[in-house]
Image (tube, rainbow, N blue to C red):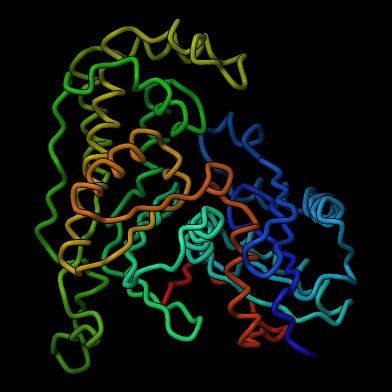
Length: 395
């Protein structure tokens, strides 16, 4: 088939708890972007239940794809390629999207493109940068992907429209968004916790509770292994030489728990949880009615500590690797304090920083279709026997 520079790509995303479909033209013009949320399904459990997520994807994927095509003024026959998230993510959820994409590609005789979910988040930032008419990017780019499942730092380069990535930092335990959700659950604030904490933090004193910054004193066992056959230490590959900028958020989550215990906040939390039980999407006013000053101060202090750690380590990596542009993507990139702090601190370093629009911060299929476009131009298609890769790395 001839390669069309203005190709229309149908993207499908089902890595976690959002069923998404979108049509993107030429990798930059979003014609439709439909997302079916599963928040109501998982809310009673305070987090994503993998089996339930897979079942909801099965229910939603056909109507979501049909709606995306209709809004874009396209048909199954008129799109030029189909792109789908291969990983990382929940294996069962990924397989729903992949199976549907395979069936479409086979029935329609369309090329099929597999996309890394993390690269999708980076291309969500790139979409906004292009739409803003910011001109050419200056490389190297440092990309922070921060969400409920991921906290990664990547050095990105571009050669002949091919983006390559080197991971220079990752979380050793909880992802940043996971820490937000778990702290919100601990405090009886509901799910998803990140947006709730973001809204309430403005009403508390961020200096009231002192949290220690995470201290990582040992190498990650994933980077420093023993070769048991030779009895010798395996050295990292040459391209990985250089300092790492890892994150750790299990400690601050535990610190919040200890604060709750030592300040006897459990009765108030139980009352708050009961008061909010019948409200699916509480307003700020409803939340403030059930939060005392001590709780608001704890929330604000927790968010400030998280934001300061993310910003400090990212900008330290930017200085170390002399990057020229900063990307911040993923669900946590919609946090208002994170955005304002990055904008202020990056400006002091003379470093331009870009974020995705809030609609593209959380999981969506437009970012998958956009990330697929360079692969489409290079004819980087996959065979029908490819499968989900729940732990897929980005390179």
